[in-house]
Image 1 (cartoon, one colour):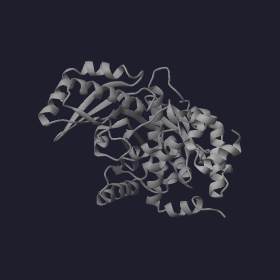
Image 2 (tube, rainbow, N blue to C red):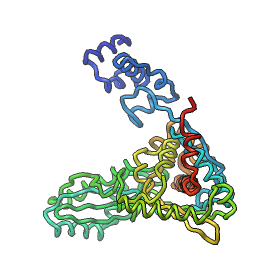
Image 3 (cartoon, one colour):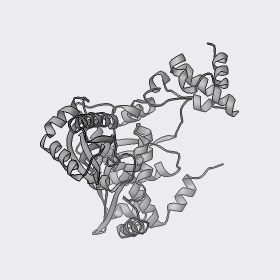
Image 4 (tube, one colour):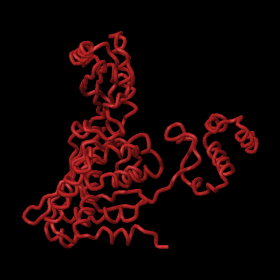
Length: 408
């Protein structure tokens, strides 16, 4: 079929947009879908079509029904000094955002951290979760399954681990609610975020348990006790993905010269805004200034699942005056991250990870992703320092008027 014949069949409804890839290959399908949308909407998609993606690779892996790509400006902050267990040194960190002043502000915080000797960052937890939901006759039957899994966990691990190469079952927690049984499985995942692998392994476990206990029925392989892509208290307490902490002690002279305020004032803003204000608003777990801002920019630049910004935005920022100096810390218990797989292999995202020296799997599986987590938490700390400093010095509005508005 020539292009016009394909477009005519699309207009008549004889062909569906999603069917073009199998018929024509994804590269040509993408071009013709874009032409069809241009003709149908009367708008130009030239910029959407101008990109570096190989749609024969992207389609079926990263996206469907493609017409092109969205472009987000990318900048860098740094050098950001990180003193972690896995990330040690000075890093230039890519951030992709359309919000003016965000990169400049985070870069200011980065400079403060580096001049203070660096951010001490650590990964304190590393578990991806999936929680199948079973319908059972009563709580007694829930206990039968939970007790059996606990006593025969090695057998359950064999069932799970046979399904995946790097994603390994580590532990589980049962939760009971009437005729509902939730089994929250926790997996180590190497350098992959591995949500799909965790789902595959959990599905295999669920099928095994259904065969062993015929009165138990799997309702959903994800029972929302995971909790994936939603704010939750359980992830805030138990953690999910990478659980990370980062801290820095900033000398009083740097607080004064770089942040234009004092440690006492910043600690007060942190307490009254982040804790009193968030409590008054009924915040579930976002006791911070703007984790989501940095998470969204970092995730877009490095190919993370953007919906996990919801999880990464939960966490705590703490600031204390210490003999005139400022102690600052971020606690991020729920950050799904990857340096391997999914969006990390997209061309610009791969280059961003290469800037950090962290694309793919390292010599020891998992080390690259933990290094990325330590850099991420340090970047978030930089963003928190700068924003709270701007609030304490009353410079926030001025900065946004200068950098965050159109110059036209």
